[in-house]
Image (cartoon, rainbow, N blue to C red):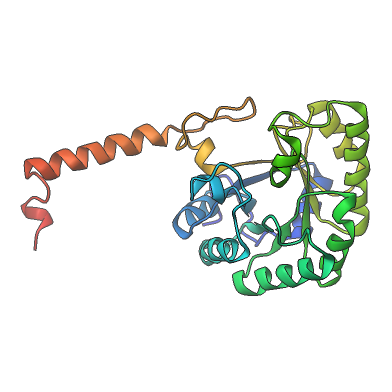
Length: 273
């Protein structure tokens, strides 16, 4: 089965992402961090799966993405890769794994690729990490950039508010996007930036832009699966659309199970050996 509303069952590659931009076909991406969820998302026809360092929040309960380690990202990525047949699998490089120097960044990038089997990596930042990105690309590893709100820099920003509203920061974002495209990144994520700016960047560069809180003018969209499925509570940014209310569904199902166990109704005769 190719997937829900998807007739093309070919493995999605970085080259396909660029083809999709050229054809005007929007790119759909969701995060995933485990085998079971990744398999469901992949079979539903998603184009890309991101093993985000957002696992720090969703899977571990941390307030930021900063605590995630290379070992933890490899664990989650390996679990996802085992389940995926079609989607392009991209793994975040966690905070501290590429900011020290280019050599350490390349070493960690190679290790993540070798031990997880993912298809590409994502790094946050522009000109300040360009040398590291280029070295990783030179090692034969595809890279997705990430500009705008970069959660690994939350302590520098001090807020998760929209980025690049002022002209100086908007100009830098445009410059960084062009630089990342020029040195060979296959796409770039634009997080929480004005829709007009994201649309302008999309027109100016020849690689796909993937938006999250960046309007509809980007080449694709990414969301955290637990947010769009309504599993998380208390997180409702403007850009989030909830496609289900799994929190209520799961709570009701568990409540029914508890009731049936305590009443002796489960297991019944047909559920026993």
